[in-house]
Length: 364
Image (tube, rainbow, N blue to C red; front, side):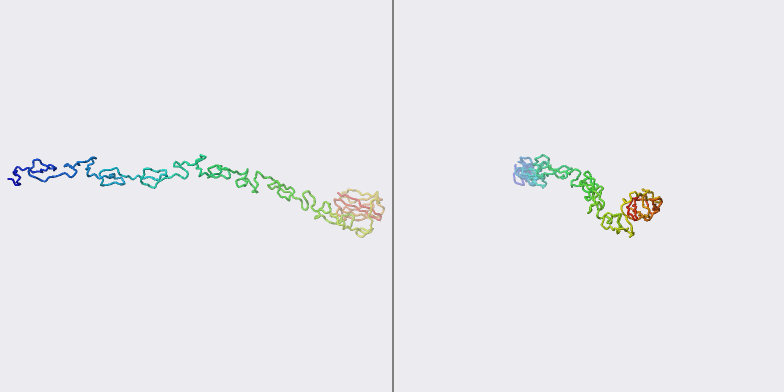
């Protein structure tokens, strides 16, 4: 039996692939079956014939590219990493920034810069005096807190000004109890009224002032005294100052020329009488003188043997008593004036047909 007519009996046929290049080649096959061949570039075991990098991908099938999943240019089809991967490195890409990253390829916008006039370490770029304050930021001013012009912002010492002793920075007294603008430490107590007698131009704290009496200056002199009699014109009492005149005014201080006298041979009441010099009776005497106000009588001796009238004139010009006396002894006449006189000074005017004068009488 040789169904296929190949000269090999059917009972002796050996089935198989007779192609030596096939993966299922059977060397003694007589009855041809389907041959199985390896895929291109692979051997019959499925291994790459050429796989230089041993990555399981045949060299002929390799696709070069970036195979790193994290790379920006990752190629999912690439089988052979060709070193072209580009990774995203975030950071500051500004070379002027303090945190500049020279290898960053993705700018995050988080650049940090130095403060103006400073470097990235916080140090001044310019600090001539080495005080830690940049020259460009220096503020000149007084740094002494006790000074009037102290400047809390000052960094570079300038001129300081201070308050005067006992004053504050506004020129006001620190201590001024009476509020007069003069410090208590400088007060000078004294009279500050220029019109006062004891005015003190150095005084700052008003003390007791002394003033002259009205119409007088500080020396006790009249401001107005036309006649120079020591009596101020404003208070002088004008009147007759002649005690022999009928209108004698004992209170008068300025003689106004108004004295009135009786006609010759008459008294002020119009009675005939002669008043003259006591020298006419050199032996005339008055006793007791001084006299006590309790005495009933005052006596005159040396009078002529006739009725003699006397007047007792008070110091204010008032007629205290007038009358004739009682002859007690030859040439002695007593006058009962007790009820009319009190303590004081009086003048006894003696009158008769023979002229006499006046005798002072003290009554106590």
